[in-house]
Length: 289
Image (cartoon, rainbow, N blue to C red):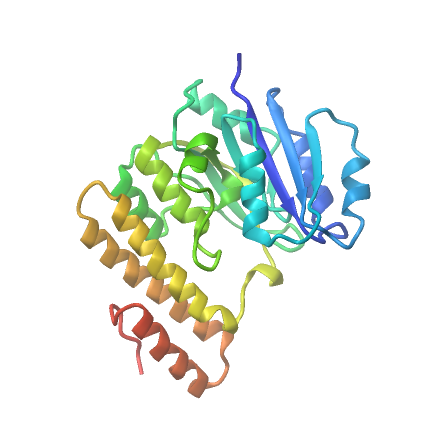
């Protein structure tokens, strides 16, 4: 008996552009033992009509009575899943027809990996390729995995990651203070518990567009979640926790400096933001004045 995989597709008001391609990619998967849960977060467009127009026994549509927030919608899908492994599939991303089967073939029937990952493409809002990042994390221990991520050797996106469903529930699902690094916090906890299985080729595409770039008002939230992520990485590390935390703090601090430089056109505003970021990250990576 092959292991069941759940694709959880949380969605909100994406019927006009991205929902149909995402849903059809899910339905095109060549893995037989599959369920697809579409959780509609009380959309005001014609999401219901689109999803219910598909006649497929693998597909289950749920409409929330009210908007429960994005992160709660993610965790609704986790809690409703019946699969051994779970894909959180954002409604603006795409996956190859053999994404699930490639992951499950790599796992060779093992049901207790923490995560299973493939490489990831980055595409723009129109689906044009920006770059491809193969997954070269095979064989890396916990600390080397996250150091490799910080060094840019591979990416970490939910669209290219299968999570162990029960382990994910056991750690509380996707949780972070501001809902920004909740995927990486879950990945850290699951790798610490079950390790990782890797597929090198790119089998999923993360769509980079205006709505997921963020804005200047998110800077403090990115700081707060960045520090929380560094703490989680250290808490789950089997050894050398403080060194890993320090490396993560510096990497994440630099990342938020970059956001400030992108979002703020005024030098005065940027300097003010840099001071805030420097303080939030405990002065671990001083900004250039």
